[in-house]
Length: 289
Image 1 (tube, rainbow, N blue to C red):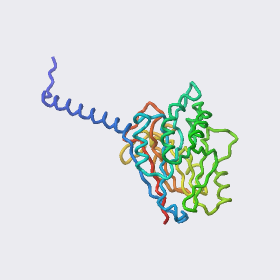
Image 2: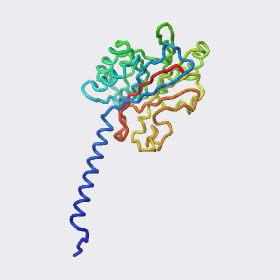
Image 3: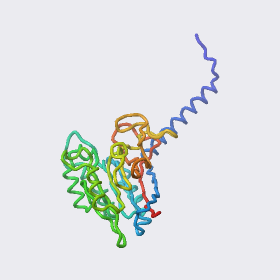
């Protein structure tokens, strides 16, 4: 008979350490899924109109039907606390569905959209999941009903005390095959309004790779989910194409002709839970430099 030489006390201590690590890991997973973080970016521009100095934009992205409480009340309170001038919704608020049951997810997300749009002007662009859900028609109708402006490859002027900037939004590439391309929209804006400050909303996070020279000042996007799992000093682990350690996972990048901010998003669309990657509200504060 083989007798273990490991003292009972040492084995007991090892079990306690294992249980503690297991509990801490579980708590980190819970925190990573439900505690909403706020990331604020103060962005300085020479061409920003003076009256837009201090203009606050809250970006919400990739909700994927996540519930942070009844009707997402905690999320709404967090948004209110940021005192935004506008809220931009950068796609994937519902999930792709094999059933394609028109309107089911839209009805579920409507209370949240209704609450947020009653507080502050909201602007929406589509993500790949909106088009894959089979609910784009009902979602479009609901957004119109709630006075949320859906930017279909178009732009609007934001005005403040007699001055204006441009806010543009593009459809996800999963949209209609005959829609205009982002570079065409940007070029049209530039030719007609060469001196205006321009913000572009686009769901996917590949702008610097596909369109590094767009004549805009700032792009707000999502899609990456922050890499789902984040590691200290390494960043996001998984790209949307399941590539490892993607470069454009989250945060601020300024390698192109513009600044690009990638939101880590709020929910998730894969069975893999978020880890060290809290749901994120992005707040952009525009500054005149």
